[in-house]
Image (cartoon, rainbow, N blue to C red; front, top):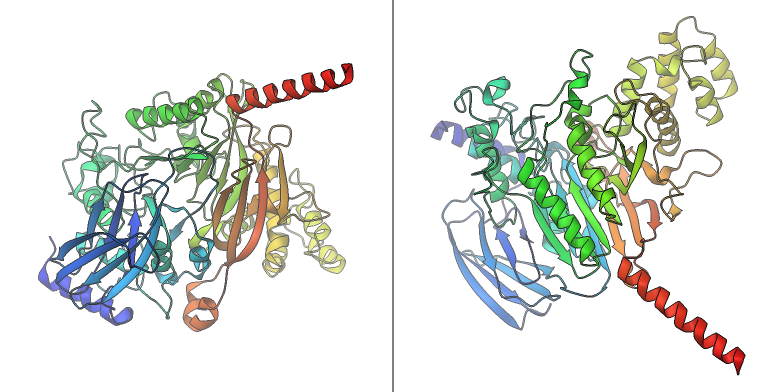
Length: 632
């Protein structure tokens, strides 16, 4: 139970570690927008009235509506739901609290028809101690139609600047709220996330750290000691008081219209917050955003050979049957309605990255993954892109499945979908350094051709990480461990582009013969399936394509659909990753960084059937006209 003493300590911790509160300390936001509605959000540090004014012009002269709300608790944000708006319209809004302090923001309702073009952004994973997140500083200047926050929007289970009174794991609503306040409060004179949220509409979903690491909402409380005493042992984790506190704070601190599952007939969903969202943007795109955490079965420990094969157990679910049925229905409707691009926002990767950590990803629920990809393939759902987070790096890959559900005996079949994971806004360490460290722990850098399929020392030499003298010296060391440590100590001083290239080759080597899944695809898109061009991030003279592998940075991904051609341009913006120690030692140096283009590629859309037919008809008319001209 939260005591007044604990609450006082918590407020004292916030006061001692964060800047003095502004009247609207966490900014303002709009979200959950449709063609005709939106949710406006604000938090004031003063009890009293708070008014939202909506305008149709950026000069704030044409008032559309005004809604007054009341702040009754300075830790509880207020929201208002606006309906009856005009589709395809840019709106501007102002929030004014009882101190007469105001902030302004903007959002757009979505078009209901036509190819209008679309630009939106995605990222996830930001730790409180790494605020103020310059990796997304440029988002407001990109004039996005919307932004997707793909989970781990707080790290409720780790220490940070507000944890003087919260020893690691948040357990009460006050502690969860403090974690959300931390990431949206100005730090070192910068409040990038608040600026981002004021610049466009936001869609948000959870991953694990909004509650606690790697929890499985559909598992019984008795299966996870961290939830002991938070409900009956036979209750599901998504009915525990710990889960409910985390979800309550998440929905409070995001511009979300609260929805709850009911009448599904599935006990693991009914009564639980519904975070699944589907939105259409004319004929350009459909967004389907899933909750991959609240309903999943217990994760399988794929590091244990005795349990790893349980990922293939039939009937295991990550999404829950009603949610995956809704996702399939929305995908099929989008295809049948001629929507050009279908984006599935999935907090964890759907691509296969191998046995390591697979239990937390969709490949840890192999039957459900196979079923979903097979559905996409069987129904010819074209131009489907999965957008994921969680692994703290950008990796692009095809999405394939085995024809019979067994990767060792079935034929690898392309679903015609592909995936890109987004790097983190701020997580120490990113994917690249993390996997490098693991590779060194496995002594991979000591391989000289005798102990593995890849001559890793030769690879480091060929990429210029090692010069000839270093290569010969290291190669002469007596043990693989000594060679690996020596090579690794030099590798981590190389530039990120070289490290990306080396790591990509190493990862591809591991994927080629994964112990749990067999032969998996190398990183990147299959040019025989997808018509793409790379315009930034390509490494000349090497087999690695950096555009499909960005793992040493903090940043975000922008997706832009051309209104005329339908081509999808994917741009990764980012900054070099930094550590908490580096931030604390020189905060102005970190906050002064501006995101730059790290990679960019464009994928041509497969024409929808109606478009193909129209183009064929036009070609036939042109041919007939030409023949008539020749005949005359």
